Length: 392
Image (cartoon, rainbow, N blue to C red):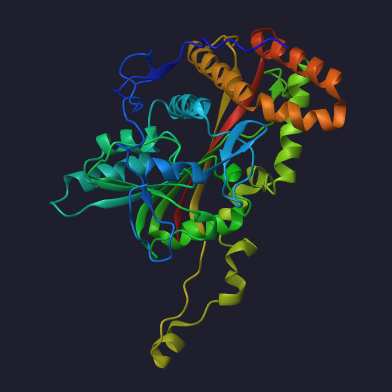
C-alpha cells in the first residue's frame, strides 16, 4: 500500500483578519521551539483544583498506544482521532478552514462586539472565555492577541503540545467529562469546536457549558459532520468516490461503537432550545412572582438558550469549485482530509482486517488513497455548521 505524500504545503490566514492565504512555513505560532520541560500545562485533575506544572515524565500518563498509534488515555474520550504529530498540523488546518468559513474572523460579529466593548471599558472590566478543547492552542492564542481585556481558560483532556505561559491564558488538563471545574455563571463566552466527537455524553457537556456561562453569555459551536455530497445544483449523497463514501460509513460506525452522539449534528438547534427535555424546564414550571416574593425565596430559573442561529458553509474537498474563495477553501479541506487519513490509517486498517481480511483491507485503502489524492475529479463537498446562541 503506497504511503501518503508528506509534502502537503501548509498555509494559514493572515493576521489582518482577511481570508488571505499566506505561507504557513513562516510566522507559524506552533511552539516548536518549546520542549516538554519548558512548556507549561495547568493540571486541574483533583477535585480541589490544585494547579501544578505537568512534568515531562508525567505526559505519557495522558496517552495510550493502540495498534502503535497514540490516543488519549481518558476512558471517557472516544477513541477516534490520534494525538500524535499529525494532530497538531490537522488542528491548525481546521482552525484556518473555520476562520475562512467565518470570513476570516474568529467569532461571530455579536461576540466580537461584546469582547471589543470590554476592551474599551475602564481597567478591571474584563471578560472571561472558555475554550474547549485546546489541541494546538492556536485559537486561544490568537484570541488573546485580538482581545486584550479578555481572560481565557483553555481546557483539554490531554497535553497535546507544551505551551509558552501567557498572562491571560490558563491552560488546564483534566477529565472534563465528569464536570467543568469552574463556578456557575463564570464565562461570557464558551467556544466549542468539534464538541460532538470529544465526549461520550454530549448532553451532559452541554448542561455543564450552560452552568458555567453567565446569563446572556454566548456559546459558539462549530461542527463538520461526516456527510459528503456531490452535485452543487442537486445535492446528492456521495457516490462517485465509492471508497471515500465507504470510509465515511466506517467512521460513522466507529463513532457509534465509541458512544458518540452523532444525532447532535442534526438536532443541535433543537437541543439548545429551552423546550428540549435536556433542560428539564417542565419540572421547574412557571411560578408566579407573587408566590416567590411572599415566600421570600428565589425560584429556579429556566434553563436553555435563545437567539439560536445556524450558519452553514459549503466545504469543497479539492480545488474544483469555480468560485475562487471556495477553491482556496477546498485546497485546505483537501489537505485536512489527507492529514486525517494519514493519522488514522494504521488503526483503521487493523479494525477493518477483522471484518474484511488482509487482502481486501489493503485493496480498500489503496483505492481510498487514490480517490483522496485526486478529489478534484469527484467534486465532493460537505458542510461546516456554526451555531451561535445565548444563555437565557
